[in-house]
Length: 151
View 1 (cartoon, rainbow, N blue to C red):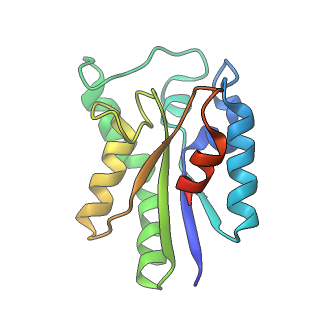
View 2 (cartoon, one colour; view 1 turned 60 degrees about the vertical axis):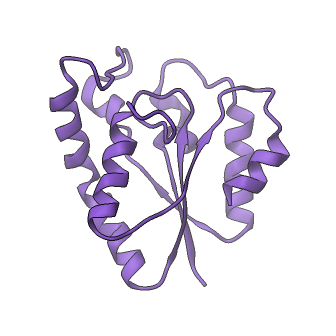
View 3 (cartoon, rainbow, N blue to C red; view 1 turned 90 degrees about the horizontal axis):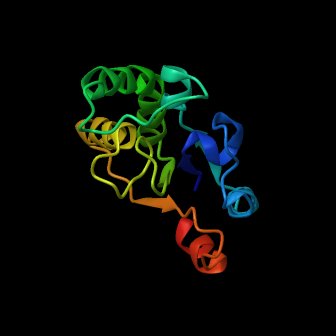
């Protein structure tokens, strides 16, 4: 069976942020693990880079700009949703959505995270449900345990 994992943009491209992630080696190991298992990768757009550039202040759910940013996220997710629907319709297993721990846009665990929340909602509107996990930002995390849980 064909499988695809949905990854936050910065896992594949850490240069969408000014600061290099502290867990960069975990990002690299995760990508190798995914590829070695024969799983395809669907990279999400980076809403923060597109909306505000590299030098940016986080937009959270309580921010005065949140409504416009949420609408922007839905707009840039539209092509991704079309891909996800096509995969789902044709029996491609959507393994997981991998977000970024502590990200105001891409955390799967923080309920105020804007883009991932919109992605999950848009998928649910299409009847597609996928489990989620956040990429830890702690460089001392148990990497083997996380890599087992990612796929």
